[in-house]
Image 1 (cartoon, rainbow, N blue to C red):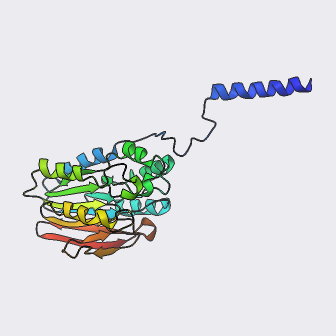
Image 2 (cartoon, helix red, strand yellow):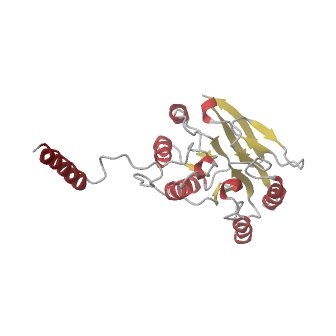
Image 3 (tube, rainbow, N blue to C red):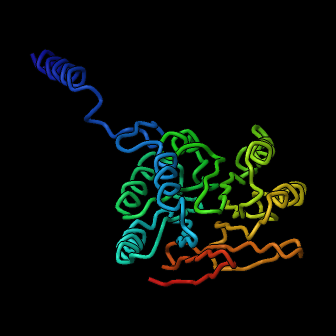
Length: 271
C-alpha cells in the first residue's frame, strides 16, 4: 500500500511537470531566451543620425566595462538624465562578466532608461559562452558605422583572442568595404573599439596592421577603447593618433566629448 501511495505521488509530480512546462525551472544562463527590446544599435543609430543631421557641434558621453556593476550603471543613467546637452552615448563593451543572457538583459534594461540614444560594441567578456549570439540579437552587428553631423563613427570588434582565428577579427574586409562605398571626403572619423592594439586581445602581429587600416580613414580624429578600466591617453604608435581609454563604470567616471568644426574638447566627468 505504501509503495502504491509513493508511486501515485511520483505520477502526480510528473503530470505537474508536463503541464506546467519549463516555467518552474530557471533557464540556463546561456539559453539565449530573450524578452524585450532587440536590435538596439540599428534603432538608436537612426535616432542619432536624425537628431544630429544638421548639427555643427555634437556632444556625446563614453562609458565602458559596466559588467556586473548594475547599481553604478543605474547611478550613471540617473546622472546623465539630469543633463540636457547630450546627443548620445557610446558604450565600449564588456556589458557582462560571463556573456550570460540575464546579464545582457539587465544591462539593456538599465541603459534603456537613458533619455538619449546609445549604442555599444562587443567586449571580450561579452563573447563568453554564446554571448556573441546574444549580443547580435539584442544589440546588432559586431562591426558597424554611423554618422553624427559630419563625423563618421566606426565601431569595431577587436576581441581577436576570443575568436581564436575562427573569424576575421579585426574585420579588415568590413573596413575596406566601408572605405570603398562611403564618400568620406568631407567627413571626419572617430574609431571606437573595446580592446586596443597591443592588448592581449589584439597582439602585435595584428596591432600594426589594424592601426594602418584605420589610419586610411580620412581626417581620423582619435580612437576610443575600454578594456583597461582606467582613463588613459596613449599615442600607441607615436604617429599622433591618440587612443583614449575609458575607465570602468565601477569607478564612476565617463568621458564627455564635444566635437566642433574646429576640433574637439574632452572632459572626464565623475558621478
